[in-house]
Picture 1: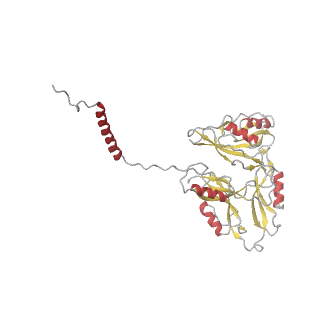
Picture 2 (picture 1 turned 90 degrees about the vertical axis):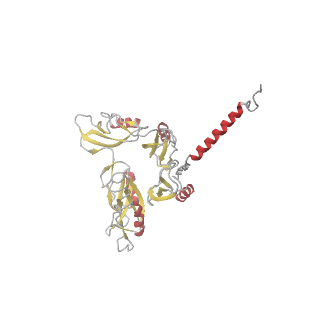
Picture 3 (picture 1 turned 135 degrees about the vertical axis):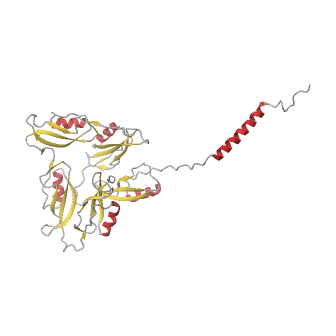
Length: 406
């Protein structure tokens, strides 16, 4: 009987090889029919340019593929002139290449400004938790200011992702440092302080209780109350047990004899007739500071002396409040090149620079407000006022609405 041929006795690995070849052909056909998906390029991170000189900041942005946007000025006595104080978008946030980065740079201090006191360096707080932040600020003789939270998945929850002023900045001892803390989920706060109950405490003990709760004393007023011991707290805002951000100011009402009489504040001195240098020294003695200086023609006053002020003399205000002054300038006959300040209220901040340049003026500081009537990025207030005659090259400061259109 004839046995099986050698082909029928082929080993099993030959059959396995045929199956593998067939599967490979099927996979190749499927891959060819699958549509090609273009990989999405990753959006780069905006570099940190805070603390850099403006020219170097522009070079850093261009090297990273970004453009320098709007440049605003803010008076800072201790920062190097033309150094970047703030940037928007914030450092290390994602933005498409070619985007503009707006900056705020330090303007030159007033020539008659008082000599700076001994300064302290702002510590590096990036990546620290709130408890360690307070310890580092105490070592540097600084105070914790506003604490805000923002969702991010690039940093551990509860750690600092931004600070202002930035690290290594030189500031006065006792200055506040604002921080932004990362949170893990939307609408989940990671840092908060509970307002303590202060009713019945003397003012000194109430202040100490607020310090323990990482809060600060706000406006203190006096109200007549025959049922409470004089000098003790009879009201507070926010109310006890309210959850607020660390560093929030708590206003108090204490029992006294005269209603609505401020008891913790500074009295605005009379500045009329003083030179700008003398006015600055007088304000410093009263624990106040010099604010906006405006020049107005007045033939009856000596040029360079104060002819107006706001707040008015003898007003009770918080220590550190800025007092705006008006000084006597040359009359129009003595100043033939004087120009009139245009009306910028209601106009978009993007075009006011060109309008001011056309009038021979320049853009000063821009302060952004969250409340007001009008469209976003429109001017709410300007200083000097429209129609004022000023010298060519005078800076015009603006208050701009930052909210969305109503």
